[in-house]
Image (cartoon, rainbow, N blue to C red; front, side):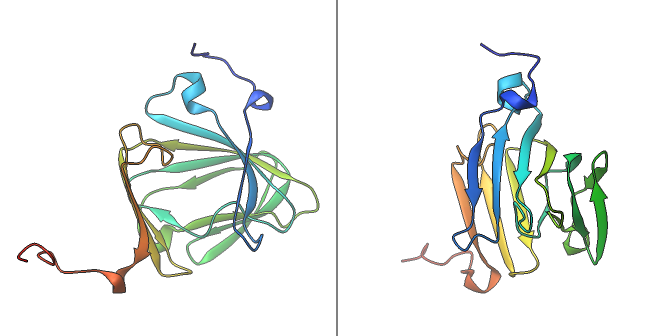
Length: 165
């Protein structure tokens, strides 16, 4: 049964991060539980010195972040902005000049809401590593993606590669 009211403390959290620990967070996906169809919302909790996600920019999905607790830095394009409780951050679609990342530079946990449009397809660029990601899913979730690919442009093949064999 779908709720239309949910407290962020009731979100089911999952651990998320990279093997070396630079990226480490607890995430709670709340949009589906609330019955949202065109908006996604996650509660994100990041330890001091960590970040949840690499520096990236979406081509189809627009994001916004609301800082609930803590402080840190917001990388946006070539700029870095200090952030703290009560701040609202925008992350519109675009190219590397709109890439973004939230970093916990404080001494306490950084907790924020990540709100986004939901699209069945998206392309994401990662300027720091030169990667890109493409995905397609019926409901906009990465967990249920029919196609998901992370790679680099130098591994591309030609349009007719393998078709004329």
